[in-house]
Amino acid sequence: MKRARRLEGIEISLIRQINALATPFSTNLGIGEPNIEPDATLREFARRAATTASWHYTPNAGSMALRKLLAAGTPFDPKSEVCVTAGTQEGLYAIVQAFLDPGDEVLVPNPGFVSYATLARIAGAAVVTYDIEPPEWRLDADAVLSKITPRTKLIVVNSPSNPLGAVIEEATLQAIANAGPLVVADEIYREIWYDAPPPTMRGMSDNVIVVDGMSKSHSMTGLRLGWVMAREALIAPIITAHQYIATCASAFSQSLAESILADRAWNAEWLERVRAQFREQREAALYAIEHGLEAKITPPAGAFYAFVPVPTCDTLYMAKALATDAAVLVIPGIAFGALGEGFMRISFAAGAEEIGTGIERMGRWLRDSERGRPRPHPPDVSSGG
Ligand SMILES: Cc1ncc(COP(=O)(O)O)c(C=O)c1O
Image (cartoon, rainbow, N blue to C red; front, side):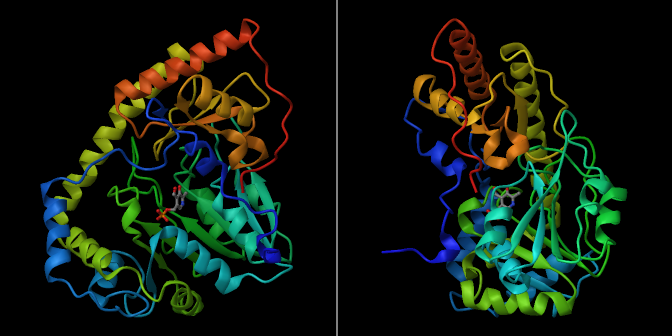
């Protein structure tokens, strides 16, 4: 059976392909989800949601009680400017379906999260990348603004970034917000920061559509709870698309999110604990990278990824060999775009011991391969989609 043209050339992402090579002996530093278990309060919130909350459909845009909590302290009206989605990923899909036509151009970061370009291609739009340069991965507003053409419909911005861990400066975000095209600000890592909270694009201009969710901040990846906020004129078509994708987000997950946000003291304390754990794991990762891989990187300012230079021009080969020969999973930089080649994404959403073991295995594999073991072939794929 021939697949639909919109899916031609689109495969399961390289992240999933590498994670599929895991065995019980693997050390997994490829994972994009927090290694944090729910505490007693979070479990109690979940029990309450399972036993007392409604299991019926909620309004398409989400329960009013949750929308009010999400909009508190933002410039958005909970009645008409918030849509709760089945994870941030569904929010991104709904946005793309709501606004993109064949012939439109979408600006996406390079290196950047794998979904943006793929979602744009599924909608028939043309993908144009803007570059973020090593070693600091500091985004220059001109790198984005210089790529805008009359066909640019949408600019995607992700801060803190997956895979870079970099945070975009406020002035740069403001320049992008005022540039003209619609802007999608993916702020899913907003709560995971190290020295200072990252600037948000919420309210920067009427063109900005903010997506966020609880997968990373509350270790709720499997519960599929995200949201989109934008001015009413922009959110209305997004809610229409969302109705035909998901009807509404899970009522259980919405009720759980409501309890989390309503208990402000517990939530603030939870987020502090999450950041404290990731701070320790970031230190363990930076130490192991410096001593095991002899690489020094700019410490990531947010999220839980280190994007580390490696001495190969074929990181896909290296990531597969590391998975099968050295029992360590890391994601090849090429999965995040052409500028990612020569880097590996190491997730430090793992215990300090695992981080040390995994990076030590990478270092040993690299040293062994220099002593005459098979060298990488030239690249035969360009992107993970
Ligand atoms: C930058 C970024 N955006 C969106 C998502 C999707 O998250 P969700 O679980 O909310 O769909 C991820 C997940 O890895 C991500 O890294």
